[in-house]
Image 1 (cartoon, rainbow, N blue to C red):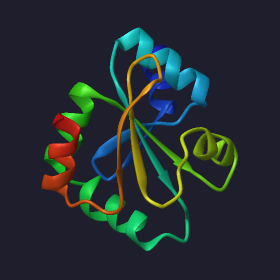
Image 2: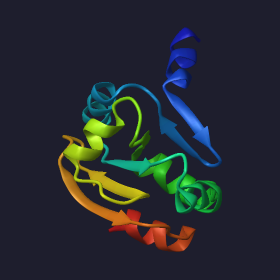
Image 3: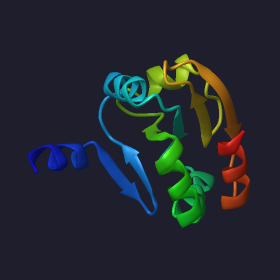
Image 4: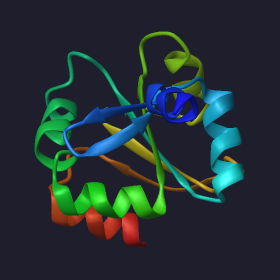
Length: 126
């Protein structure tokens, strides 16, 4: 029971997708442990398309179900905390930018800008 509670603290719900909320190094360790790729949503609080992505795409049940089975999801404000360092590391120049990473943390793809649920689902399946 205690383990389930602690695990629930590491994930945050945004509509349908459960996002990992621990620090970057914990995310990478979890990805290696589960052998799952990661998608990282780089966003900014003021970004309109980022908010649309959250409301219209990340809340989609089909997207959330696919992500739950196949990915670890992570959201990071590119202008706060670890965000600026990671945005620079991954050369993020526009918001939203979704960076797809291998379980070892190597970039394997990216998408820039708003995507509706069917388009995002297609990107996830590549």
